[in-house]
Image 1 (spheres, rainbow, N blue to C red):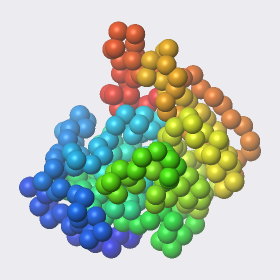
Image 2: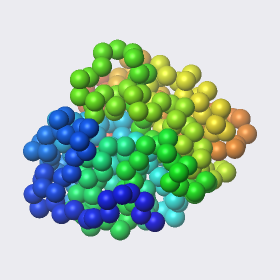
Image 3: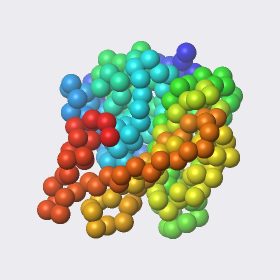
Image 4: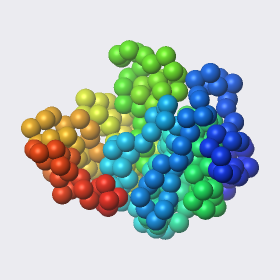
Length: 273
């Protein structure tokens, strides 16, 4: 089913062409900064804006961490430019996927990516606030939820003057409780949630998950180097599962000489953790 308001398919012959911008954000978006970046998988590319957030290692880590079956019904929340859905489609990990994104502009970028890669029929792009999930979807529709949410609490640190960038960094539009509530609503009993976050928010994350009947199952901390403290944590949870939490071996990205470790090299080849 297609639930987003604007269902026209966009061409990508000219980056920036056919891009529609909501009046609330038009002063903060430069459509001339759009570009097609390589995914290095079977010639696939992703449309991104170089003056806004582009995908980083956290999205790649999450895509490698999440265990999905080709027949699973999968939904990605806080999708941004859609890196996680498009990695799954490019690798043929799933047949179809749903992406939910608040900003209409990023939904337009996702449509361009889908058109370029010939997968418009395999992705449902929903322009919506995740707090409106119960108004859009049926309860317990999905087997898997993935989400790379904003990491920082609203009001902490220095706000970015660009509200689009600020929403990606801080919980200005949704917080961890909103994310957990939406995931719990969407997942079937036994369905899996996969998330990446900051270690400093781990108590907030675990409390929000359990409060919404999402039992934390796996923690995997990520370190840049072996002698540095973890700066990311990968989390899995299962809906309506009995309590049991497994802490996996930490993932280290770089060797002492600055080269990628064997594990991280596998991730950058878009393998699974």
